[in-house]
Length: 552
Figure: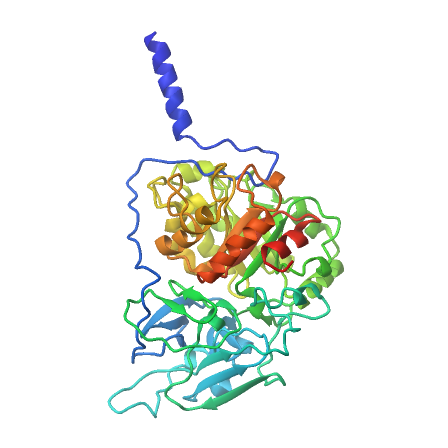
């Protein structure tokens, strides 16, 4: 009797503590019930993102960009915050008007490096800019001659932008807009804003002055909305939000949104404003005989081929991509880029266990980066699902080392996103090494956005607007969209809402497109604008995304 009771007790403990079983016939069976006892202490909650915004400080103008050596900085209520370290061959820090961020050297106009000016951008089109100006790291030390007496500042060119809505330009495609241009995005003949020439176009004007103050970079520019900017006055702390006519946007750990992207012919990359949020993502894992035509992808701007595995290399649709002729791939790349669509590869998936199988993190990153470059892809999505490693506190160190090496090999303009399950952001002490809370703290500034999987975590999880957006409940606390933002500091424009395309695409977590549309609308009203992800591509995908976005 004693042996029987002991056996039953051990079995009960194993069931309670162990991970959910995953079906091996589906690449994306995502379950995260793996609590552990451990010494991991949750980080302190950041200050309320709804605090009143503070008065502008004298140290720098809120929203300005600056390059300090190779570090890209942004002014956050008087304090310079490091956003990104620009490293890599031919990569420099720039805040130039048409190329803010870590960009290729040939996008920087060295003739402007010695000027001490600020630029005001007035855009009457739907083009989206994430402010601007400036120069290579070696040239940002020009000292202002018109600063107030008693102060000396080191500055580079700055630019602020004001976007205004006009009634006669709604036919232009703007990846940054959400609802205003839904109908237009179905027209592949009208290209998205895939490139910005530094010269002035007929619909965009620039004016340069040496004024001490210019209009601020408002919520419209940061979140991709078309709106008029506002001035901010109030009292608060360094982590705050900016409220404007269309959105309230968190600036916690914010990153630059305007980057560049490779061209399909290995020539100089094209500046791709649509690489910034919102991200409308679709994965493809069922075997493709050809890539979907751009006319079918009017409501998407990220197409992710699955999978590249550390243990097997290219499989499924990644294998299909690699098998096609170079001429066909280049044709697809050109057409997709003209439509503002990035082509990415998803790494790992549920059947690949890189950490448990003993793969070296740096070597895997090197092999993956080589594949991306060899097949001219725009970036990678890290769909890490080595549940055993995450359970045993081995995953975080492996992912951090892997991500550092991968970003070093794939600097901007390459896209690197991650696809964690939502519970990996929990505030509970379920993971001894902190799971993705710790990963974001260590390398989050090198991750462009997260395709958060709000599904396969329980029948009642993330299926209402409340549990999806503001209160995930006690099962996985602090894992709704706005709780992830407030607890971990992940910017709202990095938290992409991931859902199964159909009820049969996942075990649970499915929401109809119309129900999801309601939640998306509520999230936008609160300042979120990261985008939507669906698993996975089918003939119904265009109509589902159109409805979820409010375009149908």
